Length: 482
Image (cartoon, rainbow, N blue to C red; front, side, top):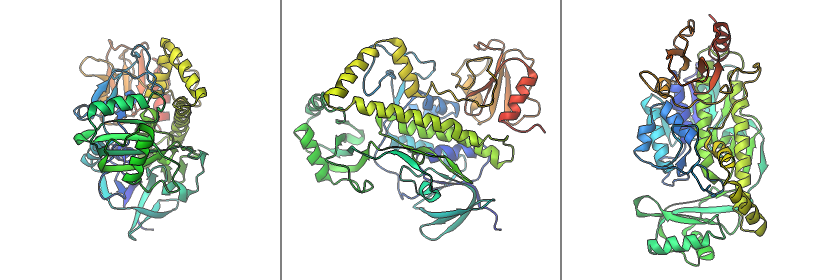
């Protein structure tokens, strides 16, 4: 049998695919990313990153690149556009929304992956694949044949990889469609702001505001759900809907990009079939409320990368790769719940608006605002580490915030994608796991426990002070004892 040309082929070069490629390259995995688009999309589908994604960028040394192109917004407690009366205090060093167009996020993540050695092939579209016990044969639309040990579908909501696997994608079909465009306008900025504010009193699904390069970004409900949503709307259709909702088309002309999106909400029945996996929108789709999609995909990749690399290098404990689905699928299910609820709250009918008024009152309570903010921001994610006895600390299963240590910040020790033992006792050891786990001794670390073991994704796998118990958890998460 022909040897695989690559360890992993990733179908889809968006933020999920690029993040996954970079994570795999941290562990010397040979990666090829296939992206069917010849050029990056000019349309910014997302405009922001949440605190957990910002923490991930910090953990990999990327945050300064992003901060140079973004704007920090302190209000992270919004739900369906409802802001609490006070900023929410999250347990994070990055308790803010980073406003940054997805076009820039895509570029920076792609550059990061390529810098680490990932291969990116644009204008290369997957046509089909067949897998066996040793790998996956991939065929491209142009007839080229490739082979890899694993294939990951990061190819969006209409994922060909998912469809070819026959994985069910259950949920609700689209009932509402919106048109999204970045256009030049002739109406003055003051008039646009006043008209938009008035329309949004009754139609929360409408919005128009400044974008990059002197353009305006507008979102408006469509007249109906298109049969083929891959076909972008025409400028005439876009202007007609603006006129219907705002009483003016703002003199929209010369569009940089036009697109459609819907409230379709679906979740893949499983994230893996043999040597093929799904991540990002290929595994879950939902209305783009609260910028959940891009953050969910980046975090999928962050969870999967180190686990798939361990599998490839033959040092994955039993069940490690399967924990990708068992951990990330419930998170996606929760996000679908959140976006369904927010979809109801932005509807203009009297019933949903009554519920919205009630939520507005509830969000004046700090506990309610914090609860929702932690769920939306990703800082409240806690993985159920199945098979564990009751942990000694409620830190286990959650991510750990950045901490100041004696010589460096905690997140600076996570740059290379290894695990980390943060030990206040000075008595614990990771002998036998060198190269996979770094040990840092700091008696003054601000921890409520003697020591913690962090996975490469920054989640706490263990807390305590017993060496034998630590070794059991090292063996579970990093490698069999050699």
